[in-house]
Image: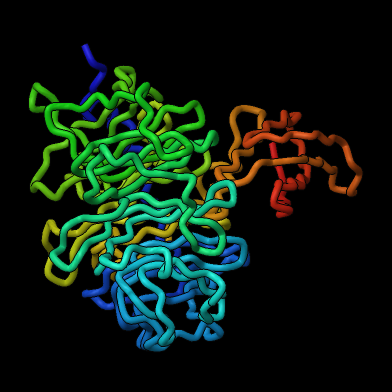
Amino acid sequence: MKAFFSLALLATSSVFSQNLPVDLSFDQGSGFDSTSVISTLSQLQNGKIFIGGSFSSYNNSNVDNMVLLSEDGVIDTNFICNDCINGNVTASVIQSDQIILGGTFTAFNGVERKYIARIDDDGSLDESFNLTTSLPSDVASANITQLSVVNNKIYLSGAFYNSSFQAIFNPVIRLNLDGSIDESFQFDQSLDKRLVTAFSVQTDGSVVFVSKTSGVFKLNENGSIDDTFQFESLFLSTPSAICVLPDGKFLLGGRFVNEAQESFVLMRYNSNGSLDETFNAFEFNFLETLDGVFSIEKFGSNYLATGRFTDYDGVDDFIGINADGVVNYEFIVGGLTSYPNVSDTAYGSKLLGLSSGKILLAGQFGKVNNTILRNLVCLDALGLGVAGFINDNHLSVYYDDNNCNFTSLSEIITTVEIFDLSGRLVASDNVNSYRYSYQLENNSILLYRLTMNDGKIYTGKMIN
């Protein structure tokens, strides 16, 4: 018997919870218009927030499918990009202090850049980065769904099409730091070349991919298919989002129906692709075929998921769980709704945990709980009992009992130094790993300094 439990069994504590508050200090003014589509959210090391998609204005200012905001939601006027790009922006990732963006565009500020470009935080093009010359000449359009930087390599997914809109070339590419294709990664040609929607790179360089046509598959570091990974599909499996857990298991979001015609939006799988029968999967009633979970993000010791699914006892389109699937009712937002014409079409599409500990949620909605906001909201999680965060630089800091845990999803942690508040060094360790854990004494406050193998240094405070 698979351990699928209806959300009704887990919802008894929700009557004691309060809605996750909207952060009104994140000042959007009039924000985005109702027709805007936000496709990607990223945060730079300096705290600024990059937003890309299909839109033309933000707070009554003309912006062209991308905008850079300060941490308080105000436009960064040093980021200049008026009519600089001739297409939509569908994906982004931060590399050091630069932004790599993908989309339908073919030029940036008049310079040919097909589908991928790297820019500085003032909006200027980094002309040393160029994928265009490496693409086959018969590629006529592209749909870029995700970008990630891991181990000084750039991974991108999506689909490339010819002039007849047939999928050609590889839906997964690995790039060198100059934007050229890394030829040592050869996508397995036995796989379907149609759209890959999401992926997650493992610490060993292997990659787990989500495809609406091929399901879920895993490639080795060189791009060959991992035959030890056998995805256990349900009666109907339409995956859209993936989040790999520290133990190698992964959460899968989307739309799933088992043989008993029970419907789910979140599942957990073992590292070999088999279904994890111990996970508390949430049963929902789908209203339409478009329903499901579209984005999953780790946030401290919790996992946030958003999409379009019917509410049950206050759970609607946005939910927080632990790794075992137990609901954390501190993350209830009170529902996403359309406004002013109320309908059931509202949904969440993208999540970003900010370095401040707050949460950005994007989608198609006009009201969050009772606050009128169009398609973007900042949620204030600082008052919750939720310790830690994961930022866009792929460094996760979270607490488990008395341990402060660090997990890097991009660069190896080489050394860790721990200081007391006077600046005295109390501990140090040569780590050379993606993970490190430090045990804190009760009622202690310490400072940490992590040095990564690319030279980056992260500092912060640990409180127990």
